[in-house]
Image 1 (cartoon, rainbow, N blue to C red):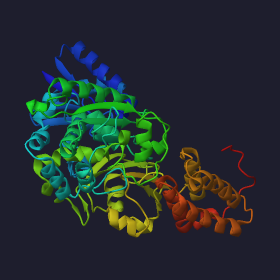
Image 2 (cartoon, rainbow, N blue to C red):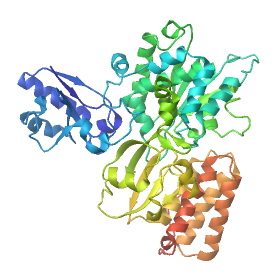
Image 3 (cartoon, rainbow, N blue to C red):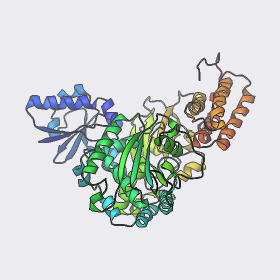
Image 4 (spheres, rainbow, N blue to C red):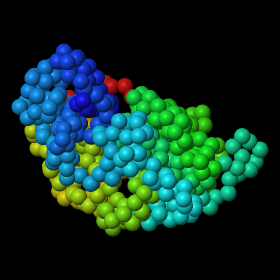
Length: 528
């Protein structure tokens, strides 16, 4: 019986994967062919979706991008046998250069397994890290994470092992409440940065990896409860995670007695509030507790007083998803990738005006130019690349002169840029960088939690000042004022929302000054 794989993740489905799957089933039935249709996760090669794979003796053979109307001609050309006689034939999936040249640790199973099959997960090394963790002490687990050099993949890049050590050493508060004496693991799955989708792909393509990582984190710090704070805009990830959690509990990987060890870990998904600011860890915790998502003053740190007033590990999806490999293979095996203080791999996400968008997992150290050209293939428009924003809407716009910078936390910091969550958005030479600077200020004004004045008021004034510059009203004086506003936002804001908004504005001012010298006939009529 022929096994055919059609992805079920959000991107593939939006490009017609469900219709392709139905068309394949119908065509096979019409021919009397027996097939097993597996709805796998995406490989992350989004420029080839819908990517259909057929299992053959030589390995999986790929076809893409497949549309429903392509199915009859693919069947006629021998798709069921892995035939090469069609224009969409790509050869062996593993030999596609975009995939073959990656260093996949976190995404090693993505697109290979049925996302909710525990048997599939175990057959590909799943839960080996959890078994190793159950045989270790909490301190031994934390030591492996320290050895790995893993840093928070959500953007802040704080050493994960240090955070875990702090929570392990912290004493839970024992005041009278339902949470007395507890610790918590919270996964920040509120993936809101522009050009990012790796968290979603983890949850939709390999959910047990996140479940395993969170269970290991619980064993490491003495927490028996975990929450996945999932952005509400990810309904498919929500369905997959809930399905996987239920199956993991039934199979003994979650619950009161994990694998008959006597140790407990319970996990649930809670939907986010639809606010970018809830990606900030303290605002997330307020929202998790049922409050309005507002940034908390620190100290105390969440590691000491986090969810429900108790010591809490707050880590991003990619951080927790790296943990199973580290426990299964050892911290040093992970640290052997990367360079300097940027160790391991990061799934970079190519988006915007890019020919080949998708997830590219590589060790730290590749240059931005290599990533954009060798993997991204330049712009989708065919025009020259002009600006690249790395690290989400609070990241700097990088000109061509900076594209040879290695993707490394420290190397980027030296030039005033951020790696962040690994999202990369490309713009061609038709972009107006004044408008991009204005968008940064407007984004902050819309998404600010409103708790601190510099962020709440400064960003609104920033939009007004940029509008005056655009309309040539006291240009020189308003340029000075814009720089002053950036200083106020950077040094006076309570969190990174306001503190980092100056990054894209200043970089646009510095590297694209010509765009700030243009004028328009009349002021904008858009309401803010």
